[in-house]
Length: 317
Ligand SMILES: NC(=O)c1ccc[n+]([C@@H]2O[C@H](COP(=O)([O-])OP(=O)(O)OC[C@H]3O[C@@H](n4cnc5c(N)ncnc54)[C@H](OP(=O)(O)O)[C@@H]3O)[C@@H](O)[C@H]2O)c1
Image (cartoon, rainbow, N blue to C red):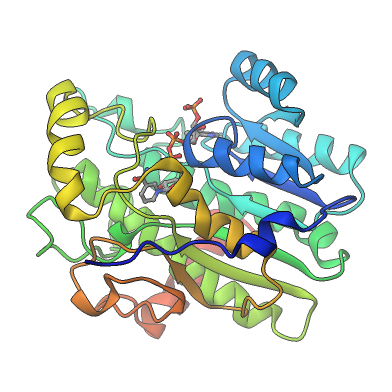
């Protein structure tokens, strides 16, 4: 039986007084558990999220700060970054945690899965939105000693069931928004998550020699969060909870361990991938690791470099 990876207990007792930690989507699921733990260690946690009412309510309850941020909308990301920089002069840890998974495409126009610029929503939110955010906050992060950026990806960056785990996730830069291909929502999720890892690796290379480390992570699979909100009820509430147990599904607390380890450990290495146990197609990766080599057929250096060029052009950076 594969052993769930835990953040060492002593790290969960560190005093984080004066540490500013920004987490996107930190008012729910794995992000919320992570936020609460960091606050219990005295950190100043700033949550950025789409739902203002929910964000303010939860932040009041747990003692975080809250800013509105819609990662699928450029204006919102720019506004947020300006407001954040007015209030905070340093950023120790940025956790790019928010995401959506496999929203259904309704009708031929697929308008439900497109941003106003016509971008596929998962590529736009999970990937491009976070890239823009990182670039707008890069200066303040680089000015903060021993800072870090954590890109929350998934084992879906290796393989994801549109056809069981046989399907390798891939990034198709000739059709990144699924205009020419048949839209398969879960494969588009895999594409956005692979993009996060390759971008993270490239950014780490470019920040080599600075005081900022960049890592990507897989938190673990199957925890009962809202991520599967678009799945049919029977799958979310009955099948996954039952079958999931045999496939290595873990709890929200267990899934937050990699977030916490990467935010707290003095030993993290720039450009590495940290993973909880996972349902990777590649069996060698299933036991996870701190860090672990992310070895997937489409995670090539050529793709990484092409993705970087495409991304900078796409975002006008
Ligand atoms: N749970 C798992 O099994 C699992 C497995 C592998 C990886 N992960 C990764 O772990 C991370 C956390 O997921 P979770 O499971 O905790 O799911 P979750 O509870 O659904 O959290 C995702 C968060 O992202 C936010 N979000 C979605 N669209 C956004 C947008 N346009 N702008 C700003 N925020 C947005 C959501 O806000 P609203 O709720 O207001 O929409 C929510 O707070 C994700 O990156 C996910 O890919 C999770």
